[in-house]
Image (cartoon, rainbow, N blue to C red; front, side, top):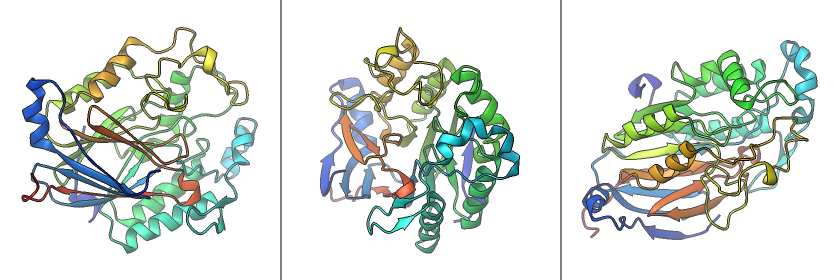
Length: 335
C-alpha cells in the first residue's frame, strides 16, 4: 500500500480477552457497537472491532534509539555523548544475535516490506538524541518501504542532555528543527492518520504531561464515533506498575525522579501532574470507540486493561522487537 493511498487528517503469551463494555448504561450501546475482542501471543496481537473496516496489519515500532551522527552534530557532542554510547550492541529479541540499533531498524523495516505490512506505528525514542543524520536516514528508510506510517516523539528524540531550557521549550525547538519531516506536515503534538476505517490518534506525552489543546484534540476524535487507536510514548498509569508508566501516575513528581541528574534535565515538578493530564487519563479510558493504546518507553513488553481498554507496551526496537498487530472486523458468528 503506497503512502498516497491513505488519508492523513489534521509480555504475555497466549492471552485472549474480551473487551467488556463500561458500566455506564449511556455508553454501553456505543461500546458494544465498536469493540470486539483482542488476543496477544508473544509479539503478535489480534484486535477486533464490531464495525465494518478493511483488515489491516501494522507493525508497532518503538525505542530504537538510533545514534547515527555526522559532522553537523559535532558542536552538540557535549549534549549527545552519553546517549551516543548506548544501544550500539544489542541482542536480537528472538535469536540473541548481536546487532546495532541501526541494523535492528533496517531488519524490522525490511521484514515489514517483505511481508507487505499495511501501516507502521512509531511511538517515540526512535532516536537517542535529535541528530540530523539519524532523522534523515530513518525517514529515507521509512519512505523506501512504501508503507504509510505515523510517528510521535519520545523524550529522547528531542532531548540534548544538559542543554539549557525547560522540557517544553526544548521539545518545541527540536521537533521543529530536526524532527519536522517525521510528522509529514502534521502538528508534532497531536495528529490523526485515518487508515482503512481506523483513526490512529497521535498524542505527544514525551514530557509525561498533556497540554489543554491535546486534550481538546483527543476529545474531538472521540466524537467521530469511529474506531480509534491511541499512539503515545509514555504508558498511561496502571496500578502496580513502576514509575515508567508515568503519564497520570499519582506518584510522578520530584520525589520519584531518580534520573534527572544523569539525564541532565529539569527535575519533575514538586506538585506532580496537571489537572489536564489527569483529565486526559480519564477521557482515554472512558472513550467508547478506543480499541487500544500503544506505547513504549519502558523497553519491556506488557499488557494492562482498564475499563475494557487494553494498553499494549512494546519492547524496544533496539533489539529488533516489533509488535505485529492485525486489526479486523469481528466475524459475524461471534456473539
